[in-house]
Length: 196
Image (cartoon, rainbow, N blue to C red; front, top):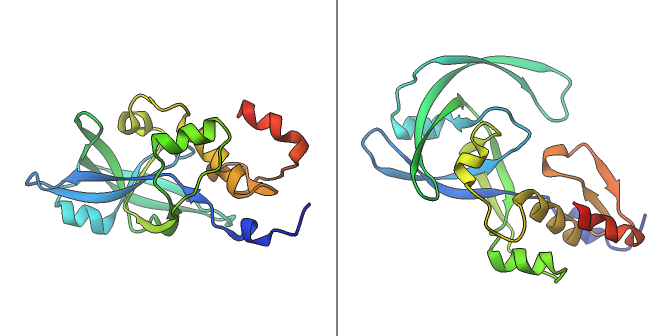
């Protein structure tokens, strides 16, 4: 493993988020940071955001929570809230599980079509990194409903992998969903990344 470039390996992983308006019970918009997690089979909203939206729960759900770097599984009873979110074309109603905490200070960047184009043709990109607190986590249950049809040159998951390879050329995290898996990346394997 090459160790002469420690700066690249110390950069935090960039996460995929969007700023999306959610509607309160009076129809007023509240902008929230939405994190997309394709390894989650459910979607969540933070309690303080749910309180702002003034939405009455329409049920409860028993959640079994496994957290990263912990062998313990926790069980919590969560309220289910029907939250109206403005997606690309329509307002959609999502059933979200209310939880006290999702994530703070995750590193994000705005990915434009121009950045996707540069990545698709192996051009270097400059990214502005920003820390954000997550208000809503969208799992696989609502992933495509919010993101809609992908019209960029690259799928979001592939864009993420290419950014990670470009930002951390020696040692990368294989996927933001699979932080535990670390791969040693060698220049002679660069052709393999085209299959990702």
